[in-house]
Picture (tube, rainbow, N blue to C red):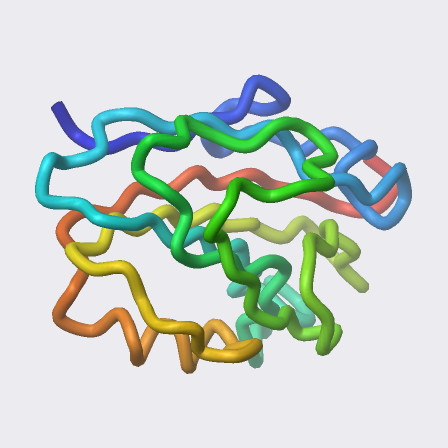
Length: 156
């Protein structure tokens, strides 16, 4: 069985509802996953937008959420998650803060990648790493990955 990540709020490649964006309540969507490999010791979740600032001329990937050391026993996160499972550590998003920051594209329809990684280790406390620093620490430890893509355009 392959590892998968889903949301009850939107289908893969579907539109993210306004509630989860800067135009709505800016809360995290409900996420669920399964198929975690037996070799996994922890999970990492990175949510980012590779279409920033304009999907017709992307110049950067904007990071919306960074979580690591999610226990493999956890099968997802609820909508508007306020308290994370024990042991979970947070990195900083591109607003230079921890926590979820919803889609808020300046122009056009953007894609938002919810990337779940299964690692064969529990990472040490990295402080408040950026997604790039976390990805560096994960090198050589990823045993599986899954992606859920949602889209959003202001005014939807």
